[in-house]
Image (tube, rainbow, N blue to C red; front, side, top):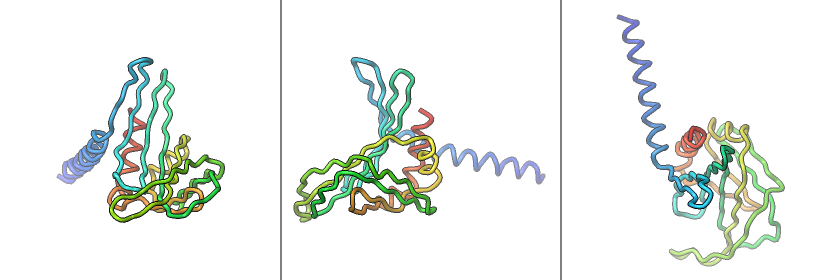
Length: 167
């Protein structure tokens, strides 16, 4: 009897885990280039400043996963390099020489005018493992700090990366 209860428990936990992962995988969009047939997979964004997003490019069986981060600030910085990420478990990903794109923006809803700082960079396998193991707590682009929207950060991003890795 104990063995059958234990077996059922293991099956149930596996099923729940698979269902959760499938939920996130179904939210990932696919786009196939009509000229060269390369495939792009991309995760949803939360539609607000402070985005965290992932993209996977499949080119001739050569897979690359990229991360997009952005932060809005009313101040202009002349430095166009540097990304630091702190994970909930305390681990860090640092890319001090990563290029940063700066554009002027006007935020609707009374946010006023300011600057959008964006970074788009390739993740290596070790960085992907870190991001899967722990959600993002905070990040800094250039000298400006950002924080993922809480309802997205705690669960979604590690799950999206697991899905992208499997595609």
